[in-house]
Length: 149
Image: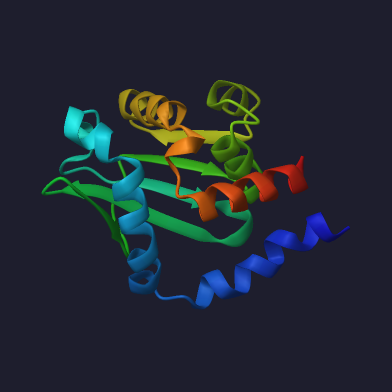
């Protein structure tokens, strides 16, 4: 019962947290986690492009791009590709309890827009290791994923 209402509990704070506040947390986190991929040029496809990450059950929409080798979280954007799923799916993906191919094949995560960029985003998601996350976040993700499994 609680797990069904969990996304609704997150919806309210997410809707009232300004994008600038979200960016203060997310940009350094993503920069840290994706630093090697940025350095290797694996995120060059994001230069001048926008990827939307939509967590549908809480109404969260992040528009991400790469500017000057920095991940930027925009308030709005015209995404070349949109990745959509629920809190549960993103927690399972982040914790590695489910792989992206399974989530996409079962349509629990969807990709709309530029097919080639969607594949690059999926490969990027698949390349992120849980160990690359800061310890408190890694523990939170593992706890959340165990809870929703």
